[in-house]
Amino acid sequence: MNDRQSTREWNATAYHRLSGPQVSWGKRVLGRLRLRGNELVLDAGCGTGRLTVELLEALPEGRVVGVDLSENMLRSAREHLAGSAARVRLLACDLSHLPFESCFDGIVSTAAFHWVLDHDRLFDGLCRALLPGGWLEAQCGGGPNIARLRKRANALAAQPLFAPYFVGFCEPWLFQDREEAAQALLRAGFVDVETSVEPALTVLDGPEQYSEFVRNIILHRHLERLPRQGEREEFIATLTEQAAADNPAYSLDYWRLNLRGRRPSNA
Image (cartoon, rainbow, N blue to C red; front, side, top):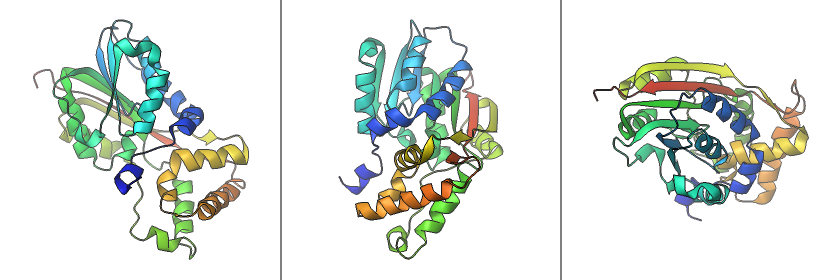
């Protein structure tokens, strides 16, 4: 696997099994939609398709285009969505370079936008992808998202054992606050913009689930920097040991950024 591929790929099998928190947040986002049922909707960052299934159920006469950068995720999504193949199309696509122009009635996204570091480019592409009057309903990490884990991971990466592998490393996320996100949406041309940040404390079921979750869902880009399995295991084991002393133990201080906007009807 070359460097370009490694920065886009996920362990889709593990993600599909472990992403219960992301799915629960996403269901609440879908619950905010007011659909006719025949729309064409873009699922931006569809992952393994767990929420795409829910979206299709809310669109009995509609269709969904799901995009994701990871081929592993898309393979899993194709299997998961096999029964709905006639109404869903899945494409490998970088959210920073969306190829769509005035195509969609709406765009839904959950737990994806924070992996895109240029939100001006992201939101500009999303706005262009919508039909005039089309809507965006999304959620991603924002504000002080996973601040405790990030602080610990950064401190650990600076230790002598790991520091040589993290020279020049930058965190792979962008966690905007409410006002930053609102301004970025407005710059992209959205109107009726609404943003908010809410806590979503997540407690995992013991050290094994915590270590597996952190390894596959949060810090996989960090672990790609470490060439040997032993070092990767020690990195995660240290963070898991620290999490045991938290109150509650093995918890993650997630914060979710809610995003809503509309392309102007006269655009």
